Image (cartoon, rainbow, N blue to C red; front, side, top):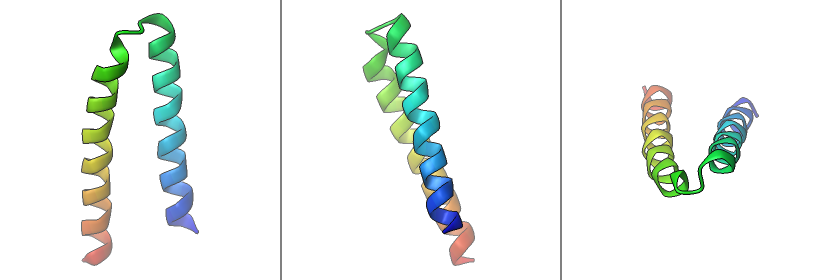
Length: 53
């Protein structure tokens, strides 16, 4: 349950960031998506690595 809440929390922050930034600058969307995907991948690997160990 805690794991689901954490991932849901990250998704909410990410969506909020997309909404805020794209409201000001539409061309930032693709940059933000690439940046966010890399960030989410990094967090996912870090968390899964900690859980495995």
